[in-house]
Length: 108
Image 1: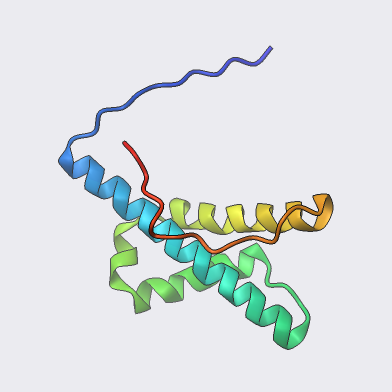
Image 2 (image 1 turned 45 degrees about the horizontal axis):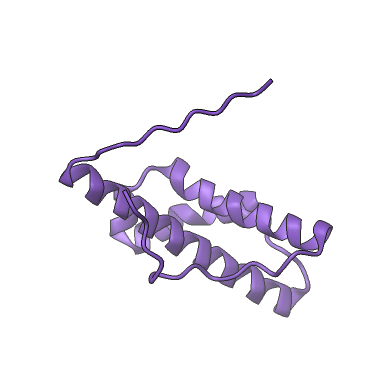
């Protein structure tokens, strides 16, 4: 039997800012990876592997300095989420992965 626990956190202002930065960076990486996947499929007819996307994150960190503040595991998690979305799309015939919006607010 599996059990789940839910905990309510009360982050201070500094922690809230750090969480917001992580969410924004993950949204940015997800959208960037989705755009690259779409372009690659249109040009070559091939998908980019999650491993290749994770390797390209290093280059992005040099291009966008603010990404260096975010740990690599969070950014790699965004590419993993995109891979899972494509897997569901092809196997379960669910909807095509959509770009993430800035307008959807995360609550603390």
